Length: 563
Image (cartoon, rainbow, N blue to C red; front, side, top):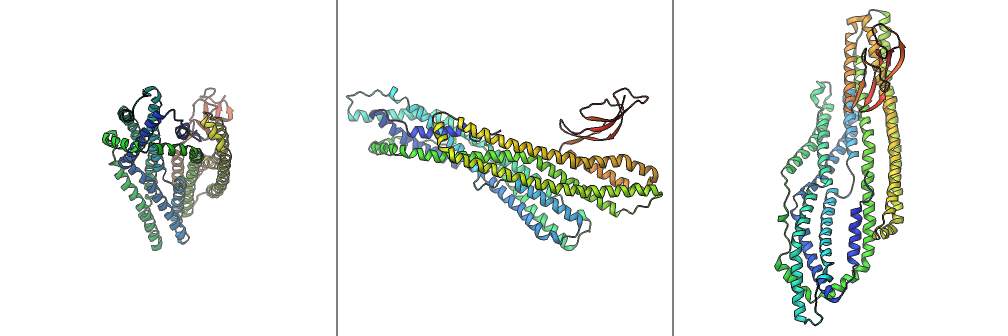
């Protein structure tokens, strides 16, 4: 799992603190340091501005606002549906629109609600971090001043000034190549930034969602809609089309963006360095006093930056963990939605059939099949509602955990900063470990709830439907023949649709065949009998299918085995 606070981010804050608190060793080194620090600041400003202004990846920051616009499209869809759905009379249209609304609500939920642009923030962090690395490179070079400075105690003022000028110029000449190397790394980090790639991924995901939403068309209903329903559906698809065109436009724009090279980032010129030396020479004392004064302010600034960093990283970690926790729930909710839609279509199909049976027993079986399906549909709707209520309860617990951790960090942040300055991170690790354990418990709880819902509600109903197909429908076909052909086709088509819905969430059916070897991991023997032609331990008949998700067996297939 992600750390609540990354060590390199702490090091940046601590580094700023130590640089500002660094003691000045002697007068000559202080003169040179003041010169180098002032010119370095100008150098860093030039580099910083060049990075911000020339970095081609800056265009990716608009992805964040595109996602906000996309979120607005979904919200507009939701509002539009909410304003009109009570006027819709076509049940199929109502169900489809409900599905669109749920997909839009899921999309809104999955899009972040942060006030700040995370791509721009990460870009700022990368550039700031790179500038700090350049500062560190300058600092390391300046740490050697006491070793490299060889000032004669009898040196004259003119000679001293000349020595400072030459020393400062040679310092920046020596740092030219290392700085360019750091800039190259910064540009690489900007181009490969996590938030940028994440939002590119979001762009692709939302494009797929939009394409899925756009699959619903007026022509699909073949004149079954009233004029106001047609107008409603056309307006809804127009809203979705607008969002899809925005995504296509942004996708095309970003495809033309290219990475820039380090040689395109200018450094401060030799002439600019010479002018800075002359200007600073007369005011070095003021600069030195300003730096020393800032030392007192630095602790407070670093403390505030440290708290902000911890809060920010905690929120990112929290969001990341929630996305992981909710991904499974979302998949099962989509599965539930698809299955309800399939059963709803089946119920409508059954109600439209005008079956005439040849036999009384056939009519009893046919009526029992229909009654069973109606009951399954009502049960699935009820269980889906209960599942939604459970998810809301878990969300309340998740929010409370985040609030509790914020309070704990606020109480301990100052002490943790002092420990970090001394190179100690045990306090941070303790908070992190406690928080991750709490979230792991929530994750385990949600997983158990999801598996119970999947096994006991969704898959149980699908398995009993398969048993209905395997036994009741077969018996009905034997009695009635072509008289129930329409019913048979409807039930078979529904079974195929249910299997496709399971396949979308990577759940496959376990259906052993005759003479397959019995495997206790995926099979459950409900009866063992001796039968000619079957070897011991082989399967005679599959009574009910099982279900498997990747390597996890959800329900074992119920079989009759040979003994």
